Length: 463
Image (tube, rainbow, N blue to C red; front, side, top):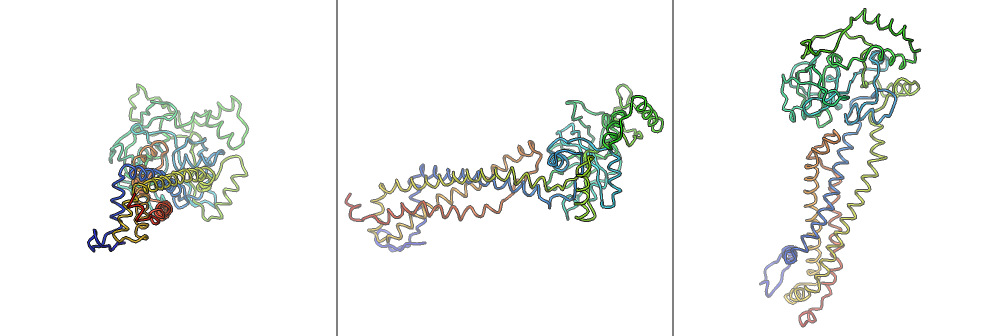
């Protein structure tokens, strides 16, 4: 937008934005503070939108390739958070026999057992015991695991996520030990070897150490004592408890079949403990089971059947997360957006006050512009452009600050929650901010602009 004036302007077109910018620079401190207040409000709003968008993407149906997560009776949300996102301790365990039974269900296409409990000695990343078939499935529909390494077949094999490899500087062939979750500082003797590096996925898989379930059961403390295992399984299946003599007879029969193994290696030269021993199924347990069904109808029927019993719980992984987003995070997001919106509005009022208060001091300047040939509409335009520059300029600065805040907070959020946060995440709602800021700039600049518009040239030059 240009102004063609005479006299002092020498018949040269003068850019109105340049005039507005010079006026802003003359009031540098006040202008900077008002623009900064807009930037802070927009920064918080952008951070809220981006973080919420990441949560929606992470907890959506498209990010999970399982129809049901089957686990012990309890809180469905805790089951999903512990199994899929690894940000909550598991509820309880299921007997391994239940996993074998579930695999045979005609409605089940694939059942993958998962055992959770320990962390890596270096970096304290969650350890997940599973089977090779886990990596044959897509981690997200249409996106298979990409692995640099060999097959996940031997008992003490391990695959590691991209963040684990980066943070721990682990490579193929690296050996590591596990720390027992229930005993701080208790490091298991057994060593696992990194045989595969998972390509980055942008999901919780990036921060997980996957170990072969067969080796997981060889670790001291992971095979439940026979008396406890027998009692747990009988209770799970609703069978009568065994008296002391019956229990001893049951234990003796199992030990006769499988042999008796002492897991205590201290002083026995088994520091690496890579010899294998046959473990009774009754001593094996799984934290949960990832299930793909033959159809969506089969998944609904299986989940319904599980609800009728008292053994286990089958949960669609999306339902609890959708409820979490809708009932808890949604209202929190709305409250934060309202608060940051109010901050932006208050900042706009600050811009209005700043420009309006400057009108008295600028009356002579405006009168000179009018005397040099500027139209009333031109003076009004200069004031409006000035207001728009402060609002939109502050918004652009706030956009940079907001993404900078997400970038800085990313490692903290990942450490505290286990969620993977992309530093380059962007919310489509950010596009709406600038039309709103443009409108705000016009509104807050209109009244001061009208004051300039009505300025009497003669009176202002004589004052």
